[in-house]
Image 1 (cartoon, rainbow, N blue to C red):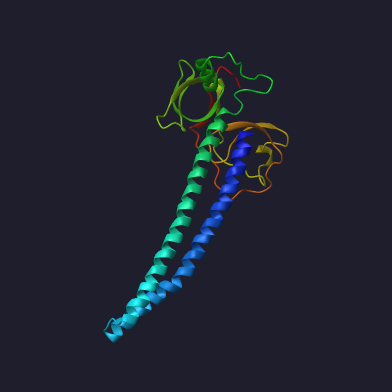
Image 2: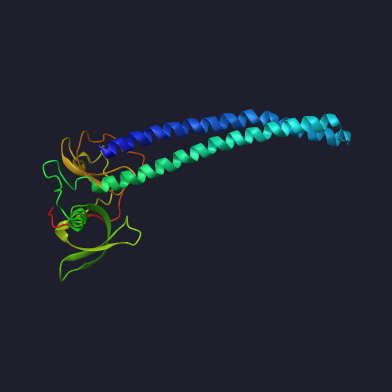
Length: 230
């Protein structure tokens, strides 16, 4: 629900931002005529080689209008920047909410008596992350992986059963339909513009190749930092 609410709010803010951008362009177009008049007035003054009281009065009025137009455009741009800041904040909240999604199911809600340290441990232990393989130890049959979403490159040591390699190439629905997930199949999907996974059911497989690139290197894996087995 939190993710849906954030998505709805983001969509509303994007619509408002689009309107503000249009207003900025309209304001700029409206002020161009006044700026052109200022330029022409200066050209006439240079041609006549004199500054008469008439031109002084005219320029004073034109510059006053230009200043007001610039302040109006500035106000719209500041409002647009506020909207962008709100959107960035909501995107960060959605990223955090996406990471927490699936930590507790409806049938197993968190206990009120659970200590803070335990809750954080459960959050870490039941979270699917996107990671990159750093090394493999054949003696212990374990991988060292880095969480690609962490600035400090948090490193984990995991057994093979807790790692799901991502496909190296994108499947072509027209030539390799058997490689696609089928309808109603349970999968782990990525939230848009995040590295957070969630459990999902396939509604309909693709029928044609998407123009957007969507392939992964062999070293990138999806791994579970937990005691859960695949």
